[in-house]
Length: 69
Image (cartoon, rainbow, N blue to C red; front, side):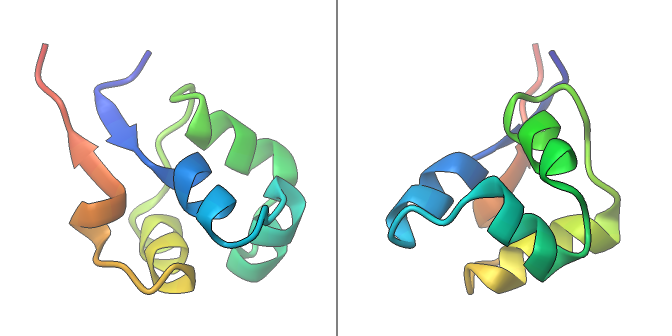
């Protein structure tokens, strides 16, 4: 697991059950990329992270944060 934490899945659920595919389309990435981000197997590029935060009308640090082990 990567040290970059996120609450993307929770935000999708709060949006009435937005699917990974729907979010991927809005952000410009695949459903698989969204799944990997949510599972912390992949850290998004800075641009993708900003786009995800923008979809949910959140600041970047509200969606993604670094957790030191």
